[in-house]
Every structure is written in structure tokens, then in C-alpha cells.
Length: 289
Image (cartoon, rainbow, N blue to C red; front, side, top):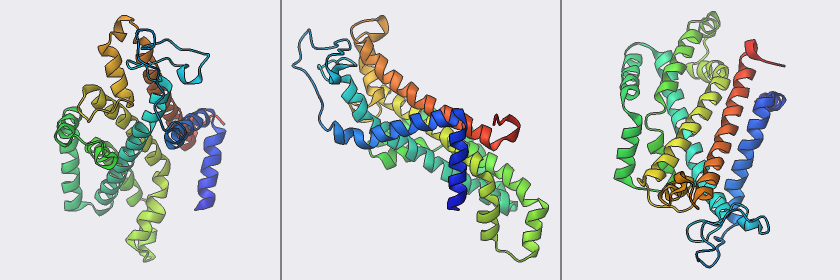
């Protein structure tokens, strides 16, 4: 098992897209883990007309991105806000992926009434207006607990994966190899976890990254809309505050809008490149090496 993981990581590293995406993603993860330890306190200047919304100051490391509405360092705010965005998005992606895999495998392998029930529920979830539903539920709970918030963000994003996994499982279940394994008397658990799940590895990894991407947009959007408890360091809250100070019109708050936006774009770019690379690895027809 370990050898397979190491071999897969080597394939990811050999692919140019996935290598760049992995480096970017790991960079953001390290910021989320160690950022609040290194920058445990907010750095700010005495508020005044000259110190609020200052443009980037290359002479001071803390001010290389400028300052915000209270003369606080934009750089430190972005670093402190990374933990919330990355932790919740990865948890939400994990929850959605686990639910989708479980539902898809059970429905595809068991078939019959269980398949009809699970796919009926899945179809209902697919038809729900996910954004509106998430906003309503988040408004009701108004929590910043990462586990609860991740559960809310993943409430509908598992359905597409469940459908896709079910289709793949149906193909594998009806394959000659699976029939031979059944004849040999191997248990259902062995067939699922040793034969079916490993073949879906790359497929699941790509969908996990997609779920993380969706969770990033959803979380930042909820903070931007003010649905969640106010967190001044969250990138969505920073963007909302910058726009309220006229950043869209090119005012002094433009840097307070620009750098959180670039932080989101950078993180999403890393995830997208990583998913493209994994897709090339998993699909020999488009593999470039």
C-alpha cells in the first residue's frame, strides 16, 4: 500500500501541472498551519488619515501589502485568515467525498431496492438549489465551528460524486474479474475495498479537489454576505469590507480588495493545476510523459 502511494506521488511530481499545483497547495497549507504561530498578533499602526489604507510599503515587511481600514497589516490578516479558509474547505471536501463514495458504492454494488432508494435521494439533492439552501442553513446556525460549517457546505456537493461512483461500480461489478472473485468465495468487503475502491482512486482524488474548490467559493461567499459570524481576517469578509469602502471605484481600499482576491485565486489555481495533473496521470490518452 505504501509503495503504491509513493509511486503515485512520483507520478504527480513528474507531471508539470500537478507538480506546480502540489507546490502551491502545500505552500498554502503550510501558511495555514504555521501562519498563526509566526504571526500570532495583528500588526497595526496608530490609525490616522495617513496610515489607513496605505499602499504597499516595501521598506516594512509587515506592510508590503499595505494596511486596512484600521491601519492593520493586510499581509498578517491574509496569513491569519488562511487557516479558516483552508481548514473548512478541506474538511467540507472530505465530508462530501466520503458521503459520495459511500452512497455510490452501496447503490452500485447492492442494486435493487437499496439502489433505487439511494439514487432517489441523490436525485432530490441534485435538484435542490444548493447555494440558497446553504445560505439558509448557515443563517440558522450562524456558527464558525469548522466541523459544523464544513458539514453545512458539503450538504449537497456529494450527490454528483455518488452518481458517478455508482456508474463506475456498476461497470466493475458486472466485469468477469468480479464474477470470478465471487465464485472463489471472497467476501463482499474484500471485493469492495481491494478491487473496486483502488480502481476509483484517481477519480475520487479529482472529485475531492473539486469539492474543496466549491467549498472555498461557498465559505468566502458566506462571509462576504455576512451570513456567518464576523471574522475580520477571513478573505471574504476583507473583500466585503473593501468594497464597502469603495474599492470597486478605485479608491484607497483597492489594495485591501486586491490582495485577498489574489490569495483566493492563488489557492484555487493550485487546486485546479493539481486536478488537471491527476487527470492526465489517470488518463493514458492525454498523458504527456
